[in-house]
Length: 209
Ligand SMILES: N[C@@H](CCC(=O)N[C@@H](CS(=O)(=O)O)C(=O)NCC(=O)O)C(=O)O
Image 1 (cartoon, rainbow, N blue to C red):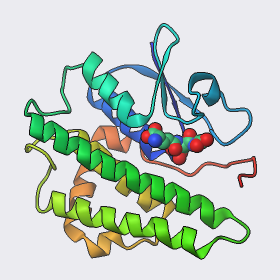
Image 2 (cartoon, rainbow, N blue to C red):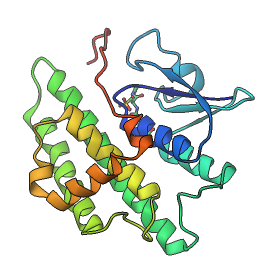
Image 3 (tube, helix red, strand yellow):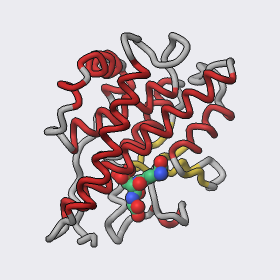
């Protein structure tokens, strides 16, 4: 059986968990704290990051966007990418922005943990988050799904970063600024794959930075 190394807050791992659930692919969930010295993540990813998909032969697939590409290629049933090449490429562009927002949020989260956070390293990432939300709101508009009128990769990525922001940056006013985006995300959140993967904080015992 496939195994997925994940962490409770991880928006990247959540994308993979949602896709595996939507495609009905069984897997064993291994929940880790990648920042703690006891983590097994480095044994399966030289970059020491989760999510990591561990295949039945023990080999591993890592980097969430690549894991999703792997899953779509190996498990094409219930496709989450359109047949139309331009729609496929656009969905991946949405994922690039959503993942970039996650990167900025994670950076800002850890900067805020420092004894003396740098103002520049707090504000600069949040400018990227602001820009990302503006782009997502533009792409969603009044739609139920971002690409091709059906649930797909772009919705997985957009829903995951918005859900992460709600948990880690509850004070960030994206819902007030973009009510249509909030309505779209709340509709996604009603899907069983989203209900079963709501992010939660984790205790990091090792000091970072
Ligand atoms: N680009 C990667 C980012 C993954 C990532 O940053 N994972 C974090 C955990 S979490 O932020 O997703 O919860 C990690 O493993 N960090 C450990 C490290 O960077 O050494 C992806 O898309 O998979």
